[in-house]
Length: 554
Image (cartoon, rainbow, N blue to C red; front, side):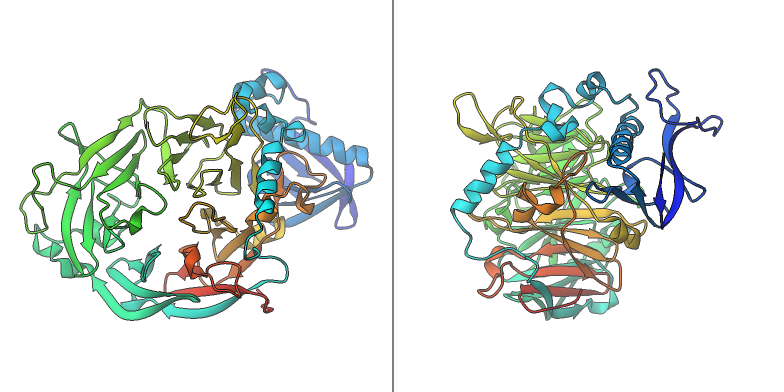
C-alpha cells in the first residue's frame, strides 16, 4: 500500500514484529495461534516504525482520505483512494485490538473480551446510542440558565496566588463554603472563595503546629500528604500520606482541625485486629464535606472497599496527646479475593460508588451493598487512574494515560423505567462509551506527560447539570463542553472509525507542570459566566480563570 507523506509517495505497511528475534513479517495477516510475544507495528517508508497502540494517537479523516498520528513527531498520511483508506483503518483497528488484548480481532474474541452485554463497545458503528440521545433530549427540554463554554467564550485569568512559605503545592482541596486550601509538603495555605476565583487570606497552617513531631519523633511521611479530604462542614481535613514514593498505600491518616490549626488525631486502619492499608479515601457522597455532623468516609485498597467511622466505640474523644493511636472503625465493606486491583473511586450525590481498576474495568456499587457491583463495564486495555461521576450518577468519566472515557450509565428496565447502572443490572442495551482525546499535534506538544484527574464541574443539587469536563496533562489544562461531547451529531463524530472520539476542547497553558485543575462549586458562577471559575494549580502558584465572552488567545 502507498500514500503521501509530506507530499512524497511512500510505502505503508503493517508488519508483525517478534520480540524473540526482532524480525518483521512482510505484511498484515490476521493469523490464528500467532506468537504471543509478537506485536503489530506501523512502518512508513524509512521514516516511521512504531508499535500500534494508543500512544500513536491516530486520528482518521475519511473525507480527506488521511490519518494523523504521533511517533517522534506528528505525521500525516494521505491515501490515493477511499478503498485504501478503508483498508488501512480497518486493518489498524484489528491490529490495535490484537496488540491490546492478545487475541485475533474476530467476533468470538471480542465476545470473550467485552462480554455479550457490551458488544456495542466492540462494534460502535452499530451500537445503540439511543440512551445518549434520550439524555440529550431531556437536557434540551429544560434549557440551562447559562450556556456551556462555546467557541465565542474564553477563559480570562482573574487571580494568581503564589504558594506561601516557598513550599510546593501538592494538591488542591476546594471548598464549597467560604474557603479552599492549598496543601503543600509543610502545611496548608488557606484561601478565600470568591465568584471570580480563589484569593489568599494570609493564613498558613504549619503541620508542625499540631505538635506531631513532639510525639515519638517527627514522621517524615506526614510531611508529604498525598490526599486531603475535607469533612465536618469543611472545618476538618483528613491527610493521608504514602508509605514511600513507590507505594501509594497508607497505614493511617491525620485529622487536622482547620479552625485551630492543630492535628487533633492520628488514625490507623485496622480490620479484625490487624493493621491494613488504604490506597485512597473519599467522602460518602458528592456533598458530604458540607455536612457538619459527618463522621464517616470511604476507603479503597487494591482489593478492599469499605466505610470508616471516626466515632470511638467507647464514646471517648481521642486526640493527638494520647499515647496510643486510635483505630478507625470498619463499619461496612468487603475484602475481595485477589485480582480486583482497584485504583480509584468516587461517589454520586446519593452515595453510590464508582470504582476504577488496573485492568480498565469500571464497577458501579449501589448505596446498599459494597459486596457485589451492580454493573461492571469492561476495560479498553488501559488502566483507570482516576474516576469521577455526575451528581445524578448518569455519567461516568474515567482517566487513562492517553485518553478519557465517558460512559452513559442509563438503561431502560423490563418495566420501561429509566434507571442508572448503580441501581440495577443494565442488561444488553448498553450504549458504547465515548473517548475524549488530544489531537496528534497537542499530544506531541504534551510530550511524555499523561492525562490525570479528569473531573466534571461541581454540582451538589438534584436538577443541576454539570457543564464541563477538565483534565490535566503536563502543562495543559484541557476543557471539554459536556453538552457538546454528548451530542451525537457533533462534527467530531462524523465518519469516525471505532469508538466516537471528541477532539473539540480548549487548553489553558501554564509555564510549569500542573498539579491539578478543578472547577469551583457551581454556586460561585456569576451571571455573565456560564460556569464557576476554574482553579489551576502549579507547584508554586495557583490561578483562577472565569469563562466569559471576552477574547483571550490561549
